[in-house]
Every structure is written in C-alpha cells, then in structure tokens.
Length: 117
Length: 118
Image (cartoon, rainbow over all chains, first blue to last red; front, side, top):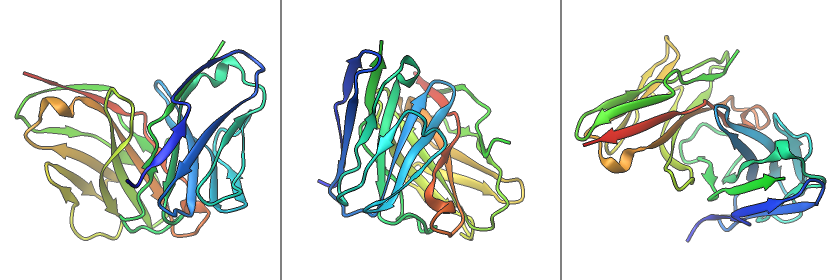
C-alpha cells in the first residue's frame, strides 16, 4: 500500500531530551515536507526537501533539524525540545516539488502527537 | 496578509443537506493550485479535491465540488447530501507558482470544523 509512515505516533518527553520523529514513504516521491499543526493556526511548514541531500527551511524551522540521506526517509530531529514544540506533526510527500497538475498532491502521514513537559 | 483565509471556525449542517465551506486566497502569481483536505477526529489528512488556476471548469469529485471564482479569489468547497461521516475539520490550501522553490510549500488556512447533525 502506498503510504507515508511516521513514528512514533504519540510521544511524551521532557524538556531538553533529544528526539527523532521518523518519516518514510514508499512511493518514490522526490518531495517531502514536515508540518506542525496547532489549534487556530492551521498547518505550518517546518522544513522541506526537494530531493536527496536537498533541504530547506519552511516558515517555522527554529528548534528543528532534518536530513535527507535517502529518498524514502526524512526524519525530523528535535535536538533540545521545549514545551512550545508540543504539537501535532505531519510528514508529507509528493511526486514532484512543483507543478500544478492535480496528481502532484501531497500525501500525509497519520501524524505524530508530541508533548514536551 | 493571510494567503489563505477560512472565516468560518465552525459550521453545522443537517444530514442530507448541502453545505458550503468558504475559502479565499491571496496571490499575485498567475499559476497556483488550490486544495481541500479533510481531517476527521482520528487526525489524518485526507485529500478531497484540487483546482488549478488555469482549469476552465470547476473541479468535482463525487459529492465534493469546488466553486472557483477566480476574480473574487475564492475557492469554496461544496459538499452535497451531507453524511454523518462528513463531520470533520476541513482545510483549504494553496500551492503557488511553477518555480521549483516557490511551489515547494502548501500554505494552509486555519480550518473549518463541520458538524453534521441528524
């Protein structure tokens, strides 16, 4: 089944304890992205990647790191989590970074709910 | 300025009735794409419908249609014959331009929570 898989789905951690949220897609998509969702703010982009070894900042990159060493994986790293990073996180991918064709739709993972105490 | 505006935080609709969820957008790029996603209480994001700025006709997907009014910069989602399973949060989103970098982001509105009642 074509999908984007995120782990863990739920995590409670403490301030300063490094964590990684993994994201993997099996659709050979070039483009991958991380979003965070907060009440009243919709989804905001954290980082994105056009292809292997190509990453760039989105709207809210502070406190996060990413890497894209393989096409299928795009982990999100919180080096020193803080309570304001408590959020619902989504990884998403699409075949190409751009193009207005409707087929270039972002497919989302199921989400990872992170709580930082 | 907000690129995507959804002015209805919450809406109610009776089962079997039609409902319109509003979305207005702001862009100066002639090439853009508009998307609607559904987020049920389980949390996943489900793609519903897409409209390209150059598309001549309004998009339709089953019970979903997009009322695209380019001059007014609006892209309202119409759900016909509402069902209880339509109760969810709905997000409007936009991707701008054809350039690989400017089109790299999907910008979301704040969402509308739809509740379908008996």
